[in-house]
Image (cartoon, rainbow, N blue to C red; front, top):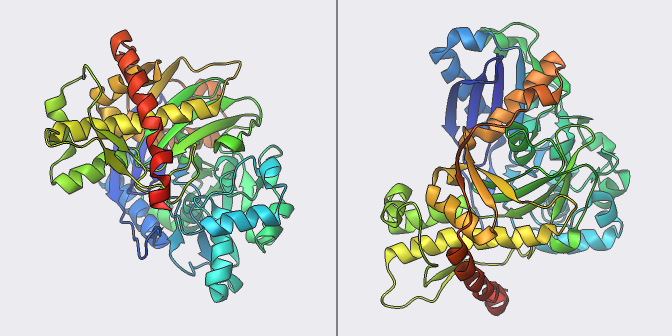
Length: 485
């Protein structure tokens, strides 16, 4: 039996998988975000640990025999979060998260300090990444910075609390701007640009390699054996790729979680920083991936549901399973700034085209379409390759909606598949990395593609209408940019 733990932004998921790769049970615990100032986004690292332990406690109570049989654990987590530890191993301040935009000025400063950054890290300096956060801390909280002994990402902190070991995998490390992504090792040049050294970094492993052993105390608490292996694990999107069997160059998927991600597997380091595309290590050695990122995907629909004081399902129901034409209203989904392709922490959301006849349904449809238009921006930003994207698996909370999937197919012009267990993809991927670490099995034998539940083909009339709507939508961001700066 294998346990997958996904430390997300809004909650923690824990899943149990058996030897056949079947989902046996799952549990979750919520997490809260803190926004103490505009553009700030923080969490208490200990809340991740409490939620993980609580979720596994729930599994152990409901499925004691299966939980006791766990031999491998995999970790997945939200990327980029700066978790700063003192010499005692305790957090010095709340973690600064991936969707925190405070370090825009520090990004420019970091690129001035280190002209080689793009070539080594393969990515632009963006506020979401970890390194600019440390430049901000050094400037605005110098006492905290002087006390930093280790910088861990969210799942690495959870691993430390589960095992006592400070270790990170390549895929998550690639999102710090401290990794030489092509060589898969920490870069002393990049670290020095932020006033840090190799001693501030955890040990590196591949995602399917053993990284630690579960502590005796927790093993006893959950009735497990004394030698449960913890895998290197993966950043949330690379873990989702493992869960989807996306381990062959050219495989692609779109995640509609809190954020949105378009992910394509590559067999080489393929940076494209000029388009604000991320080029990271995959969770398996010898593989990399390209990734376009939007900061507010399913979060945009959640925001609208909160504003209108109605559950998302209630908002979606009147629209049915498909729409025949674009909404007369358009929506920019930049509620927390944007990464690909704009790299603009000050970008803001907007409804455009409102008239007195506009209905609630028009607004809901506009939000769905705005997120998909942003996904089309990302698809264009990835650029052409010898393995073009012709189909996408859809995962994340947004994958529940057949309507959103059909809009996706119509706007992107590719076949879109809703897949089994699409909402727990990262946790499933983590459990499979735990299995690989515990057994040494071949990835191709474990990382199989999930069953496709429903496929959506582009419809020619709607495709043409959306081409026109997308062309109009693309003019909105530059037109409104001055208003938001």
